[in-house]
Image (tube, rainbow, N blue to C red):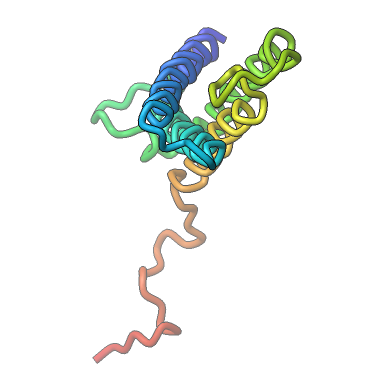
Amino acid sequence: MLRFAKAAGLLLGHIVVFDILGVIGCFVFDLFGVTDGGGIIYAYLIWFVVGVFCGGLGYLQTGSIFAPESPNNADWADLPEADAIGRKVIFATLLVIVPVSVLCYIFQWRLADNGPYVPDNEALSLTYLGTIFTTTIFMHHVLRPRRRKDAGSSSESPARGASSN
């Protein structure tokens, strides 16, 4: 339970830090007039990219909280338990994103949208939080160790045209 609390704190910290970076990005785009005319497209792009980085870094760093100590300092994604660790990270991410969304709805989204900033704008906030969760699931799928049906089989099969000369 303590590990879930640490993971939730770390993920919440990531969400806040990357939110600040997204606000800075929106401000810079607005300052230089990039957002004139089709500004909402740039805002969605900024929050999508920030969400991808937040979800990816959050997944990697939170996994180290759930990983057992490795004697050879191996990356947790290379451990045999990486699949189970990744599922815990996904669950912890969900435990953070859902309450954040509910609190934003109660205190912010029921009011008028206030520009291209998260958490003021409901649509952009859902884009940001949804991208974080989607990236977490994507990272879990990409980084988990591949399961092998036969550990003794060779990497190249004869059906692929390998010949023995």
